[in-house]
Each structure stands twice: as structure tokens, then as C-alpha cells.
Image (tube, rainbow, N blue to C red):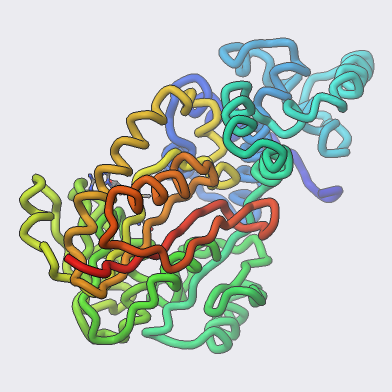
Length: 405
Ligand SMILES: C[S@@+](CC[C@H](N)C(=O)[O-])C[C@H]1O[C@@H](n2cnc3c(N)ncnc32)[C@H](O)[C@@H]1O
């Protein structure tokens, strides 16, 4: 961090992205693409901007408290924002940012006065802290702290096209350095700032960006070549592509979702990955599901959820809405999907229910309720992937078997 240079270009881009995300409620990934689409950036500049934006959004409430402003005043206080950013990151404030020594010492004393406020230091909004304590009790402070850290970059090797060691060498030849993730096969952690998506290896479909926790979920389904598999909430196919690589092009993988544009993206990704056995199908009504009754060996239900396990990657979600308000509707949707979609399983077939949340109400509580009401299913195994314990994003999965019709 000590070599970091907060250039005028980095400051300018940062403030525009913050304005979009914080005051216009634009999703962070969209705000990045709006800002970057017409800019010629080096991969270092790209990395620097995402680092500064990410560090501010992860702890937005801390910055606003130090600056004694509300979020709508960020633009007019941008010089002070970068002064505070420099202090918090142990850097001298660059000369292109207007500031005085007196300002710097005032900010330093405010920062000192806030060091014991751990909730603020973790960039946690009050609604989330309340929900976290209710749901996770004494485990919450460790998870809250882990969720405030910068995310690492991971990729999953596309084993349809090559192996982990070969990919590592291919990346190295393109100036991208990567290390193995000892606990998860076929996943690499990227340790350089290089732009991944411009690489030849990516364009040739040799890997996809994916958190190890997400790979653990698709591994849990234990699909085999020749199986009939349904990924019923496939989205843009993050997990479908991994499942397809386990199937080695044998058997059928039906990727379904209620949003066609996500399935369209999935098709593009599947083509790049040479995942030839994926078929997509839009869910237009409950009939789409009913028609597939008793049809599949394996079922993945990667249900819509609060996303509170992946706040490292999507820190803007903390400021966009109070999730505790929308949570009851989500819980009802998850329970409905679990009840109706599991009817697609053959007797003896297995389902993995998964979320990118660490809240028990979206996870084990849903499974307990389902099992109490559906005695034709048994629980095989389940796991909460804790950001605090693993350093990965936070997830939950439970694997159930259908015993009788
Ligand atoms: C957690 S995301 C899936 C992410 C995806 N599996 C992946 O790994 O990239 C949940 C998905 O469920 C979809 N969805 C929402 N309601 C649904 C429903 N009733 N049936 C099926 N999919 C639904 C959403 O459009 C979203 O793409």
C-alpha cells in the first residue's frame, strides 16, 4: 500500500463511481462499466480505482462519520474524502488534493476517537448489525469483520479444456500470477493486478471467475457423466458451467431461470467453455416445472437470497436497501421454490439447496421446515461456508435425497 499513488485520474473516476452508487443507487458493477467504457486504462489504473472505490464503499459510514457529512454531500467534500482516505491508508495526501495541515490533524483526532466503535470500523449499517446479532449471536462480530475485508480474486479451471497446472503456466505466460487454493481443487487465486478478462486464456474459455465457496457448492451436487441434471435458478450460469465440466459432455444439463437475459449470457459463456451439453429453458409459469416431474437425477436450487454472504464482493448492497424489510418475501420465495421444484427429482435423486447467505433463517431453518413437511426427503449433509473461518465468500448448502414419491 505504501507505494500507492492517488492520481487525479483515480480520484476523478472514484468520485464519479461513488456518486452513481451512493446517490443514484446504481449497482457497483454497472457503475464500474459506465465509468470504464470510454476510458483507456492501464491494468494498474483499473486495479487502483477499484481498490479505492471498494475501500470507501466497504466502510462508507465510517468515512461519512469522520467527515461529519451525509452521503449526498460526498462530491462537494471530495478533497476531504481523499485526505481521510490517505490518512486511513497510511499515505501522505498528494499535493493535487487541496488540504491544510490543520485539516489533517482534525481528521486524525476524529479517526482516533472512533477506533473503539467496531461496528463503524467494520463498515456495518445498523440494520445489518441488528440482523446479524439476531441471527448469529456471538458468531456475528467475527463474520461482520470478515465481510468488511477486500475480496480476493479466484478463478475456476475449466477442466473440459485443460488442467490446473497447465492453466497456471498459460496465465504466467500472459503475465498473470496465480497460486493454488489448497482446500479446493481446480481453483486458483490470482495474485497479480492483471486484467483477467482481456487474457487469451479467458477468451479461449480456460477459466471462469468464481469464489471457492461457490465451487464447493457445485462439487457438493456430485454430478456424474450421463446424469440428468437441472440447475433451476441458473442465472448467468456460474454454477451450470462448473457442473457441465464435471459431466464431461455426457448427459443433459438443463439450466433454467425466470430471466431470459441471464440465460442468454449463460449461452455465450457455455459456448466459450465448450460446455456443449447445456440446454437453457425459461420458466414462464408453474407448468414449466410441473412438466419436469420425477425427471432428474440431480437438482441444484441456488435460490434468490439476501446475498449477505458476498458483501466483500458487493459492498454497495449494504447501502442500497435495508434487507431486513425485504427478507420475509425472500424467505417465502425460497420455501416455495424448495417445495415445488424438488418435485422434479426422481426417487433416489439428490438436490442441493444453496444460498450466498450465512443467515440461518435463509439456510438451515428453511431445510428444517422443508424436512418437517416432506417426509419423503432425507438430509444427507450440509455446510455453512463462513467468511470468518475460510476467507471465502459466505454460503450455505444442504444436500437432500428423495426417498419416495
Ligand atoms: C443466486 S442467483 C443464481 C446464481 C447462479 N446459480 C450462479 O451461480 O451464477 C438466483 C437466481 O434465481 C433466479 N430466480 C428468481 N426467482 C426464481 C424462480 N421463481 N424460479 C427460478 N429462478 C428464479 C434469479 O433470476 C437469479 O438468477
